[in-house]
Image 1: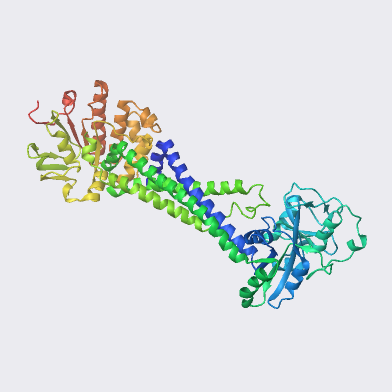
Image 2: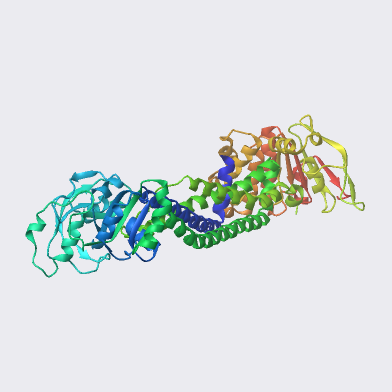
Length: 409
Length: 211
């Protein structure tokens, strides 16, 4: 305890130097902390949201875009497909389950998804309030949507066309909230769910008279609606019946039909590969900063050793052992790096906090700024290692302080 | 309490020193006078266990100093010998109390009530929480005396304690050292070239042919 407070006193005696070293180390570690957090949370979120989806089928275009738009709801859809073709696909013997989706509208930036109850089941969505949609224009809100927009069962609102929040409104018929989902930690939280029929009606009624009969007919809860074959949807999510399907189905769809099939797991791996280059670059930078911080601590301790030769000699003269002096210097390095590590983790989370702020609907919306991962303990361990390395040589110098020479100079 | 016999030391082949034998009991005091270069500081370092002599023995409180090795000698010095240097060498980042506290910590002395008492006796009781840079030269030297005393040493060694002080402070410092040594029943050895001190301690030896 005495040794600890002694080292602390010496650090406090040169506050600017101490602060600089802590900040430098903290900055490097903050970057690593942010990277760990984003990578970890992103990956687990992406894996969670893609669970149970073997294949996504939509209009031709970028397969990555297809996955991002229909599984994660972060990119623009590739276009629409004919429902007739989707229905034909559903009859394929390799397909176990198929969920149609119609995208393209939003409310205040939250995406409106026209689908059926299978989509809720896919993510095990549970109702906190109310119930599922029964009629056209009935909607169910994800937990975050309801919280963010302060909507409850019975409230009504008008959707807007497009998936950004500034596009024009569909002001002919309001949506009515019939249910609010409990928070699930997956993509459902950020969505407004409704029937396919609702989405079709929204776009049909533009400039036309309402077909009131149609609006009071109950919507289909499973499978495809029994509508005219010319209707369009955006994508389907499907599950394979057997492992064989993974080999045959994508190839069949991509070559024989006008549709495009993309596998979420494959595209995620590709996405991380693309991101990997950038991540590596930033990680490299972080390690360089940490290296410089270590060097800074080394130089600070080494220089202070010159000024402190007298002090160290005095300590020896009043009974401190060589080992105690060694420990005294190493302790300074350790205190510096421990504080730096804690500052770094705090800075990292603070940075994430600002990054995520106001981003509920974006790609980073699912990232939780203040959750702590076990990997972050490694950051502390790594920092302490830097502390020991940086202070070893100065401590060795302290160990060999020549008392007689110093005190009688 | 302390005895040194047949001590010799050489830094290199050209300069070698032989030192007079010293024999001192508890409560006794000795002044070693000598010009600079006469080897008196070398002798002090040898007596303090800081510098091993080529030949001879130093025995303090029945313990042959140079039979102890490394850490053991450091600990023995810390708990038996109070050192006062020409410059006070008070640790800058610590307050006066913390400086004395640290001396007690390293020597294994736990009597913390001794700290304010000794400072009071040395006339600097109100400086207990001061930072060293706010002390005058004389005050700092007294703090260094306090640091030597709060470990209840068996031997107090002072190296030119008055060299940088004016007359008034020099006399005070010597008499304070004598007072404290007497109270602790410790042997006191002062090494100096300061002729002002000569009359204050009767028992003295000269080195290097000095007066």
